[in-house]
Amino acid sequence: MNEQVELANTFGAHRNHLQAVAYRLLGSLSEAEDAVQEAWLRLSRADGRAIENMGGWLTTVVSRICLDMLRSRKSRREESIETHLPHTVTSQENIIDPEQEAILADSVGIALLVVLGNLNPAERITFVLHDVFSMPFTEIAPIVGKSESATRQLASRARRRIRGAKAMPEADFDHQCDVAQAFLAAAHSGDFDSLVAALDPDVILRDDRQIGSARVSRGAVALAKQVSGRAHKAAQLALVNGQVGIIVAPQGKLLYVLKFTMNHGKITEVDLISDPERMSQLDLAVLGD
Image 1: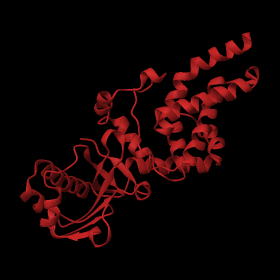
Image 2: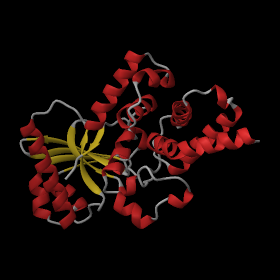
Image 3: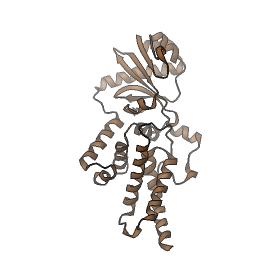
Image 4: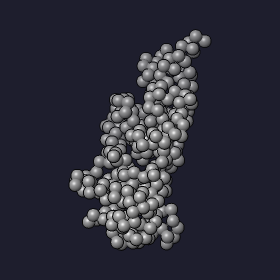
């Protein structure tokens, strides 16, 4: 009995860290709690005296549990990504209320979670464990079932996707930001003329929420009428496959993406993507103010 109590106390000392790891790996407080609880069950069945590095052992176990949970999602995107108070989530009492959630929705943390949702499970595990928690690749490799070299490549690929690292001259990037920001500001304010000015006269809109012929529409005036004064308050600039576009992710729930094609200072094509499977294939990186 005393041995079990001692084991429980040892686990309790690591719970905060395990919760932080699981949350960043899964993006869900409830799933993170489940993963940590499963880690305790596995520890309670193990010989604690044979574990030399308890912190490392538990982190490895939680990471493997989270990897299995990510893979079980079978490529569907998370329906929602919950927010949290970094490093302090220890129980259900710490789950933030809607008002706090709305405030944190604009934070770097929730932006990162949106982007992490676009990584495959192995990339996500590798990036979080190495870049966030400084775990060496030699320890991560067995978790994801890859060689150390392959694990390094996973981290590098994840880093590029998160940072939106695409070859784009600075001038082009700044110009794309200006055009996209002008479009977004005009859509928010209902400035019809400014909206039309940001669009090519023959701009094409492809909207996957529509059916049949309504999926595709053409013309700056028609598009401006659709969006003028109707921009979602959670809309923000982002890199979409390396080009400046817009994402809408209120409180971390990714609703849709606007993928822009620009030419000669105008938006010539807009792809509105809301299908979860299609969004999961995009490289997204939220741009700061």
